[in-house]
Image 1 (cartoon, rainbow, N blue to C red):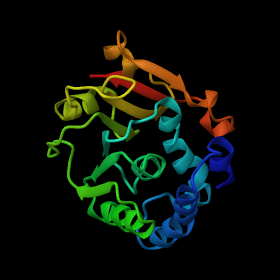
Image 2 (cartoon, rainbow, N blue to C red; image 1 turned 90 degrees about the vertical axis):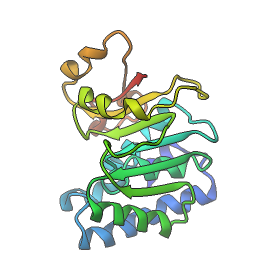
Image 3 (cartoon, one colour; image 1 turned 135 degrees about the horizontal axis):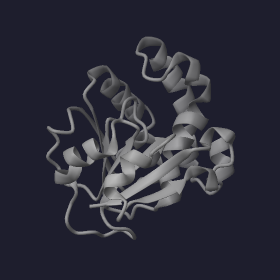
Image 4 (cartoon, one colour; image 1 turned 135 degrees about the vertical axis):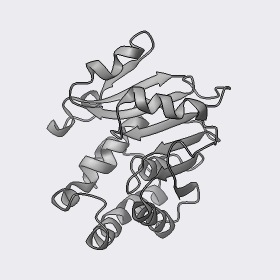
Amino acid sequence: MEEILKYFPSLTETQRKQLEQLDALYRDWNSKINVISRKDIDNLYLHHVLHSLAIAKFTQFKAGARVLDFGTGGGFPGIPLAIMFPDVQFKLIDRTAKKIRVTNEVAQAIGLKNVVAEQKSGEEEKGKYDFVVSRAVMPLPELIKIVRKNIAKDSRNSIENGVIVLKGGDIKDEIKPFSHIVEVDEISQWFTEDWFQEKYVIYIPI
């Protein structure tokens, strides 16, 4: 939790409490349903929560914005972002029922009112959103092909509507088809821990 407070010192009391509750909740659920690698649960805040919040360093969603978390797994990046932006509506989808169950239970336990989590594929999702966010779910060209239909036409945020994804490693081939529009930001400019080297926020306006 210290890692979060280090980079987001002006959290409200509610946000702090919600973030603090995540540790016990994910440990408990992870013992029943494996949503985070057992070896990685001790790094929950650094590798999952703070990583998700790199998107909050990249851009600030405006109140009333609608965001789709595609392939949320156990709720990342959707749940940390929903805590950070309580006036933004988040829909979290994943194909795996047990992961969505954990996501719903965690959201309910910490009192998130701005999250809906559903078991469905990206192809099935028909809603319109300002942004689609995702964390290393599939190669970018495939993702864009599926979610292009979900991006609303009218932009109301400080950046155009589009896709914001968290990726790591060699991303050259993935971003090549979008080279004229893509924006790539190194997460290490915001978070200094070694783990964030060669990890990126990638934004593609649509």
